[in-house]
Image 1 (tube, rainbow, N blue to C red):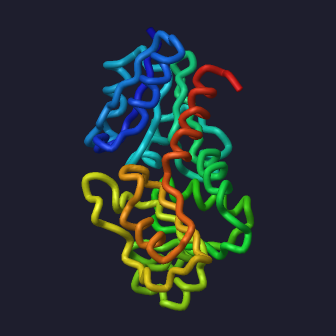
Image 2 (cartoon, helix red, strand yellow):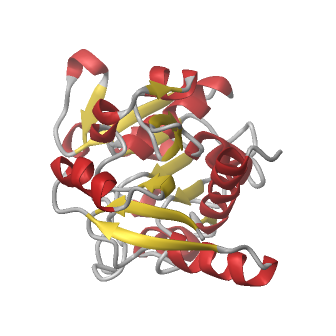
Image 3 (cartoon, rainbow, N blue to C red):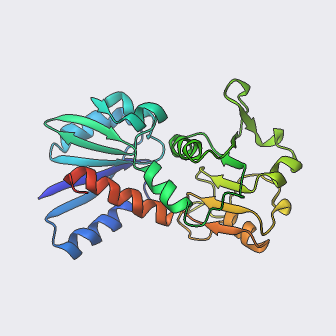
Length: 246
């Protein structure tokens, strides 16, 4: 039986185990997919020793950046972005990939219109880096927003962001875990009263399907999309990497 899994912490919100278990059953694939919640990335080497049959590993919050130190090789995208969400083991060597970029681009562009710019990218983690990479490829100007500003990297804090800047940014992308189960009442601290039908709100969170962030947009007629589609696209891209299938 082939063995795959997911590392991150916590994993109560995980999509991957159910997705791949269903896929394996439906397609008659002799494989298993398990969740491996790691309180610290330092436990990753021990997991590899305990589960030597693992040949494919997904990586989620908060280890998409810190896992890179354990990899033997990385794809050009991982090297440029600095985040990895998919690992393939080949002859004992760990090779890192980033399928978030493909998942986000294909999902985001289904509804996004070129007029919906500039963008606000909320959060600075591994998923945010993938989103920023895609926006650069699409030539969409954006500003990264975080809890703390970092002028040297062009990052503004929420307190630095004016009402006029929020109104002018017609695309808001939430790359934080705010609003995710079980903390469904949380959302990025923005002025949602500036939203209009011209805005597009994209939330990488998928559980619940309608986050507090997206609900604020819908109330004001904004176009909205959650992260479910992105997850499925990146998961299938990971499967293609693991199995060397197109």
